[in-house]
Every structure is written in C-alpha cells, then in structure tokens.
Length: 273
Length: 297
Image (cartoon, rainbow over all chains, first blue to last red; front, side, top):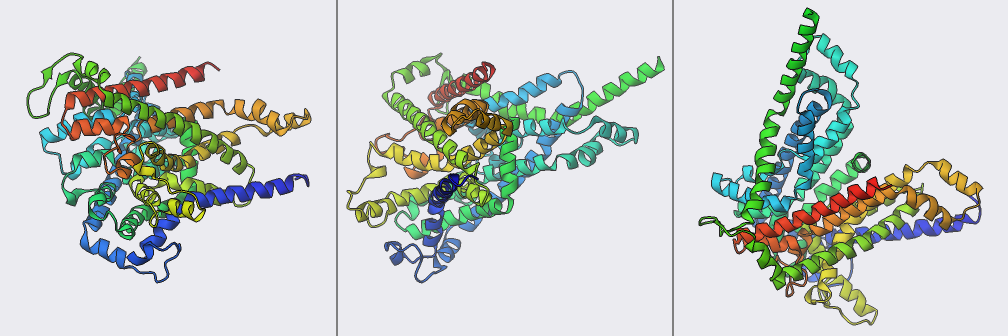
C-alpha cells in the first residue's frame, strides 16, 4: 500500500513462488522421467527429448499394476461409502437424540482416537488369521469401516441443524431414518464432502495394514505393490517413476478439481477439532 | 395425565431409534477397536510366536526392552525424527503462511503448490526421493553437488546422513498441512487488533510477537501435537526408502518399523505388543500435554 512496502511485497511473492516451485519439483521430475527411455534417464535434461509411452505400456502389460490400481480404487471407494454412512449415522444419533447413555457412547467413540493403529494391527492380524480374512478384500476393509474422527466431525455439524426442522418432519409422520436421510443429511453436505475426500485419500495412500494383511500379489494395493518394486525394478528408474506417477496422478486430479473443498475441510476440521 | 404418558412413550420411542442407529456401530467399536486394544495389552504380557500357546510371563517383555540396545537405538531415532521434524517444519510452515496470508494475487495457486505434496502417496514419493539421493550420474542432488564442484554425498548409504535423508521428504509432505492450518489461524485474528497496533505505532516485529503469535497459541499447540504424533509414528517413508530394513545398521529405524519386524518378521508377538504399548503411552502423554497447555491459558 505505501510505496515503501511495494518492493518488499514483490520480493515476498517471488520467494514464495520459488519455494512453491521447489515443492513441486519432485512431481515434475517424476512425470518427466516416466516418459523417458532408459538411456535418457542418465542424461541431465529435465524434459524427455523423444517422449515415449513405452514405460506405461510395459507396466500395464507385464506386472500386476492394473489389478493393484483396481484394488486400491475398490477399497478406497467402499471404505469411503461405509465411513460416510456410519459416521453420519452415529454423529446424527449423538447430536439429535436425547437418550440415557449418550454421553458414554460419545466419550467411547472419541476415545478411540487415542488408540494408535499400530497397536491394533497385531490383534487385527490374529483375528484375520483366525477367521480366514488374510489375503481377502474384507481383510483390507474391516478396520476402516467407521472412524472416530468422522463421527466427531459429523456430530459437530449435525448440531447446527435446527431442531424445528426435525420436529416438523416428525409431526408430518416421517420415520426417524427418513428424517436423517432426507432432512438432516442435505444440510451437512460440506462436511460430508470434506469427510469423503479425506477418507478416500487416506485409504488410497494407506500402507501399514495392507502390507500386513495381504501376501497374495494379486490383492496388493498400489502402495504395497509400489514398495515391492525394490526387488523387481531396482535400477530401472523410468519404470519406477512411471509406477509412482500412476499412483500419484489420481490424487493430483482430485486435488486440482476439489482444492477449495479440501482446504476448507482442513480449516473446518482444524478449527472444530 | 394421558398427555404425559404419550410424551414418555415418545421419548422412549426416540431412545429406541437412537439405539437402532447405534447398534451396528457399537458392535464395530467394541470388536474392532476396544477388544483389540485390550488384547494388545494382554499379548504384551505373554511369550507367543502366534502358532503355539500364549505363555504368560508378566512384565518380562518390558524388562527385555529395557535391556535391548536395538530398542534404545530405535527410541533415539524416533526422538530425532520427532524433534528435528517438528523443529524444522513448524517454523518453516509459519513463515510461509505468514507471508502467504498477505498475498492476494495468485494466493490459491501458491497455496496449492505448497499443499500438493500432502495428498500424495508416501511410497510413491519415497521412490522419487530415493532416486534423487542416488550417486552420480543417476541422482539429482549429487548431480547438482558435482556441477557446483562440491563432493558427492552418500545420503541413504551413510549411517550419519540416512535418518535426515529419510526425514526430509516426510517434512516436505507434511509442510502444506501446517501452512493451511496456520493460514486458518491467521485469518481468525480480528483485523482491529492490527489496526490498534498500527495506531500505537508498533512495528512489524512487535506486532508479530505481541499480537500474531499469542493469538495463534491454540493453532500452534494443535500443530505441535498433530505433527509430533505424525513423526512419532513415521513408517511409510522409512520402509519405502530403505527397502523395509531401516538401515544402514538400524540408522533410520523408527519404533513402528521395529514393531512391524518384531511382529511380522519374527512373529515375536508378545515383545512386539509391549513395544506398541510404549507407543500408546507416548501418544497418550502428548495428548494429555495438549489438554493441559490449552487449559492453562
């Protein structure tokens, strides 16, 4: 605003921009290299001189890659659907019903946030072994079907839904299920979309539990499959970068399309939490 | 009187609906969260290789841990990840957010550039960084060093540098989250505070230390806790960058990787469970500290 501040602002903007470019450099190198031939990987130029899709063709044709991609997509989608359904169901019950034991249930759900996954994976593994869930989709799915975080988030938002609306629907003779689904849910779509994005991305990148529960290469998720590259393509960096690109690009697209909602969601979650 | 009767039954009906809503989730939380958590404590008191019988041995696993040099090495590593990770990423995140907050032109674009690494798959990005760390002529970092006439660095192959080489991408990936949360905190500070400071003739530094930072107290406590917990649980980057070894010579091995190999490499379930209990206690301590810090204001 003052003339003195103007050059300072330009410098700050330039520095911020350069920092931002440094932040995305790994993506640029990864993507550029995925279009390079093996010979070109060892040359310093960033952009491929003769771009090729051969790496993609090799990866899609020769390894379990397409299957891993589908597995990750399936698990992330099913988990997200389950989390959206159950977390908002529980959040709604805790926000809008008055019943004995409500506080206890709320504290119990909230306290699960204190239990680290790393502690639960041992008993989960033993459970999976006992019930035959190792190397199954259900084994990948069951630990993440509901979350304490999502329940807490949804409860906060359902509390903002006016009681008058719910009571009016009750007077009209609507069932509690229908009121939840058709009156309350449409009013919390911002929270639902934030929860959907977080859950999907979180499961798309999940690593520890899939690494433990799955041994069968056909059932690998993308991160587990990528980690197994160390034995397979150790020195073929262009193939490794192609795999990394395939794993990353969907998340990048989701981010570019939904940046506003993601940022708002983090701000919401950060402020509410 | 009949009116009161009807109201009571209505309350009961609603309570019944509530429990109908909660029935399946309660089964889930009891069997997939609480029972396993309690089971982990009990397993930690046993000697068990998963195939045979669980043999109760009291707190022997905890004594074994105290005398295990690898465990202490792992704890030192984990502590380094936490302290250096939080110590570098939090101030950096604040400085970026502080200046980004004043930028109007291209704000969303700049924010996007910083946030992008946060949503990516750690295992994929670990490969990219691993590649950057390779010796000449493969690795970008050594290529740059050599072109500047500086000596090559071993990075992941050195017991001294490997931990920091693994930590760097973890900091890189978490930075955007901190920037966004700091931005939210900065936006929540009322403009009038700054206007008052300006009228008082306070300079930029005084405004920063007497208004901005004190107002961000809750944000800072939240971020310290969240990122401490994240660095304490570091696993994906270490596993993917060291082929699951935590090497060279355990130089990068964090607690969670040690738990993983104890449980699923050696099937020493009791000892692994005891180490998860240690992790649980550490996380609990951090969270309790957060509550105290927020209440103390």
